[in-house]
Image 1 (tube, rainbow, N blue to C red):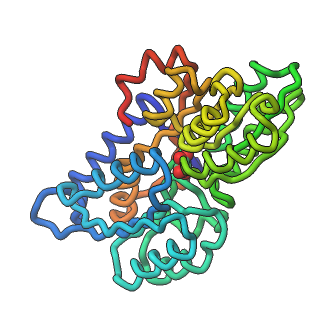
Image 2 (tube, rainbow, N blue to C red):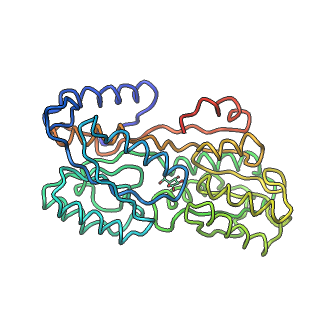
Length: 326
Ligand code: GYE
């Protein structure tokens, strides 16, 4: 089997496996105090969004000294060249393993080959790369295309036959979630009367979403836009500020669908300012740490490990918002 889907009981099982894997670890990642710490270099994208903060926290918790790791953390501020330089630095320091959340999909062949030549295993978390999967040990994350399809299907159900003018706030250009969420959404709205009148990157940030939305509003006016698809909640939250500043009512004059389901996004959904959110779970730390431990122990691991996502209407968000972990 090339991949597995981690959901519900399966996910609990996987976490249990992670725990057992740690306890019996022969490489020191067991937290039993006596062994040396396993050194892991983690190349994070940056700190662009609420999703990213939750992901970083989850990774730092899982790769803690208590769990037998020494984590060398780097956040590249969304700069692909800086991220590759960070990975090269991990290689020259001779870390035991490298974890990467790749900012963009392309451009990884050389540095992944260098890690492989140095005998340092690489685990990818969150975003994917276009390099051959021989160049890394494993990946854990979410199905971004499916998230886009789910968002698109919601739009199709709610606007399908009505001529609808849509603007899109894209994630970071060249990133796996921006590429896949665009492709999935287009698939979801195929055959409908929804027309994309403009689409630009807001770089997954609140400021980016606000600035690009201000431009859209200047060009088309509140009345010229019916629907906004934002590739993440933070850009939707920035756009909400822009719509309100232009005298519009977000969630009514302009309907909004976004992806992530981080706390502030869910609050805006409950408040009626966003209309639908597709979840993207950022809590990947334990699974990534389990994969690193397994790989270093020489255990077989799946190449692709998917977590399941849910989605929320305004009513569903109101029911769950207080019990969410991020
Ligand atoms: O949706 C966005 C973040 O790669 C899935 O990156 C992640 C995306 C997430 O900045 O908020």
